[in-house]
Length: 522
Image (tube, rainbow, N blue to C red; front, side, top):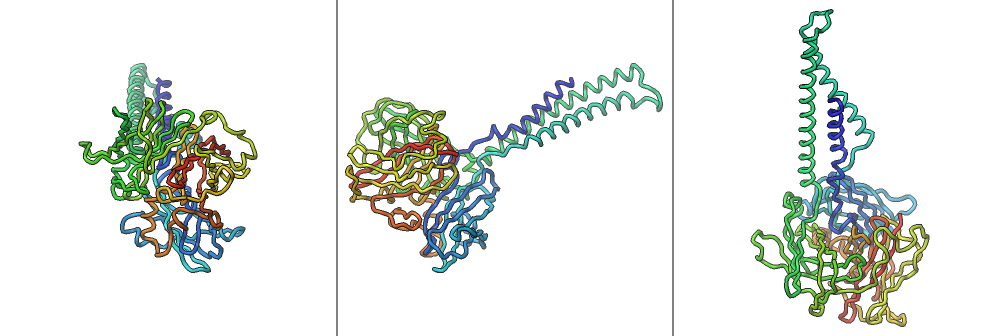
């Protein structure tokens, strides 16, 4: 019986210690890339903002701001919701610390107290006056934090001692409670004491089993309420090559009707941005825009449809981006096996790309992991002879470090492409995918934030503040004037590994998609 009790106690403690593994769900808008990277104007000042979001809510976010404009004397930041009355009347912000080594670098910490669609309101003072901007930030618990091993061992020991003590005390009380002082228990008292010990052990066992069940139930219920999980996505193929995408219900969203909301809003012109990437080599890529079907589902769920273009057979990873009317973005994922489809030609803003299969899978590396350098300025040769060049340099990319990724379009003889056009209102788009698909990010020249969320955040900023720092999405790199055939993206890779980048620019009415592979090191 003693061994049985110990096993049950161990199971109970293991449930406490292990529940965080069961509940872990580090999935946010984007996939596996929760931190925020943003560049834009706060009045006359050009800022590069990094926000490292907490794993749990309430939690502390780290804020780092680098100014490309000198002369800033003070920066304050305050977290407020993107929409609602509080967005118009922010409280006094927290002062960021100015670096002694670099007067243009500021850093600090802020609390995010509740889950939802937030913005960091940045207020700047300096030699050129005052400026203000809003940076969208998603606050959502990604997983629970595990208990420290030493604390778990201590609690296990204390619980074992308590259980044995309770059983012993009850048995001793029954065995010796009727015995006169100074006398020893007789055979009858000893026998009754043993029966009571067995009964007490059964009761303690039942309490531990009930406690284990109660703890798991409460933890799962709490996880459903607190741990963010993207809505489920069901993808099916109908006769004729029509792809149907059905968004399921999300309890996490429904329990936050005011701070997250459920209705969708367009993000640079479309309610959904759909990405299909063929597995395992990521050699086929599609960026499509399905249409919302009104009133076709009796439960009011969002249903999207699109007539697929010509697609090669294979298994495709599906990433679907949407934005709520609060500015909260979701990236839903699914997989589907598609046959060979002879679809119509691509039109509008829909695009595709072919590439050689990615070298290796998640367990292999594209480049030597401990290499100090990478290929300088890798080039993607496009089907029409145009070249897209990544101005990479030779320094390795390091996980969780801010980096500028600059790309340019040039002709086969190295001359700049002149007839550049905005693609969906900006200079370019980039989709970043880790080899095992655990990271997916759809970013823009202004950073990793959703453009629809950025527009909402800027509505309540001071006049003349925020927004893209130049025409449509053309970005400067630390104060350098951009060239017409270039686009740059601020980003930080969330973890080491092999990545494939799909970079999209437009010229002469044609969407070009360059494909680049890279290794990110710790």
